[in-house]
Length: 327
Ligand SMILES: CC(C)(COP(=O)(O)OP(=O)(O)OC[C@H]1O[C@@H](n2cnc3c(N)ncnc32)[C@H](O)[C@@H]1OP(=O)(O)O)[C@@H](O)C(=O)NCCC(=O)NCCS
Image (cartoon, rainbow, N blue to C red; front, top):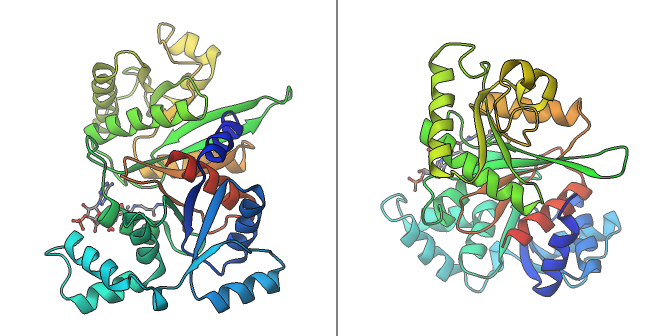
């Protein structure tokens, strides 16, 4: 992937610690052993040390050097509960509830990042997206200047010449029905993420209409969001509303919107809602031969990412590098 080697180089100069919330999962153990061998990223596994070591031995992975932190035997647990109480002031009934909440691996791992014990977190090998993301929304929160946490996928396909074709798609995983302003934020954050992966962003706000060919309030929302994004970032190549064919096919673009600065060559796609986005990235992945990296969360105060529950160890390894490099 464009920029992937560059991410490893960044980590080699400044190795980070990444928390894996599912410490006994064989895919996490395989990825951890590979990361330990590479010596540029330190895994922190959440769970019971005996269980983790037994699982690693049974699966045949060497995880010597990995830090293991057990929520049931953590020397800073009281401090963690105090901090959680403070962060969730007015939203948690009792200290007992707080202790119970942070004992769960998804919250515990997120609190390790909040306390500065680790730099980043990757979860979701068994937790749902919502259960991985919710602790981050509640504890890590949005960074200054951002109103929402959103997400994008980096989509990569090798072409015949061996070069990688890299696209960015947002928001396919977090915001269910983004408002106009939220679409603007998703677009500007996706552009930043695309740049990290070596893409010069050409941003298409997608719809079932191309520049007024279709009518309806969903079209108006996408068009208005696009206009706001253009005003907010005049240096970026942005256009919309565009149908997907006009966005990617120079031939169709010539017919439907010949003056567009983006159409025909778009590489950063902003979907109108999570239905379109989630279906869209999976079509590219399953029928278009693209590898999907993500969802990469954008707008959080610390890098925390979610795995697909169907992920394999290589995807865990790649997402760990992406997540830590964002730190
Ligand atoms: C992300 C998601 C889990 C949040 O849902 P939730 O936990 O029910 O959200 P709530 O409305 O209860 O909010 C929980 C907290 O997160 C905050 N929050 C919710 N969405 C947020 C967002 N997009 N950005 C920033 N903060 C957000 C809320 O303000 C709230 O904070 P508070 O407790 O301090 O007041 C939800 O939007 C979701 O399910 N998205 C789709 C996930 C999915 O299934 N994806 C498809 C598979 S990849």
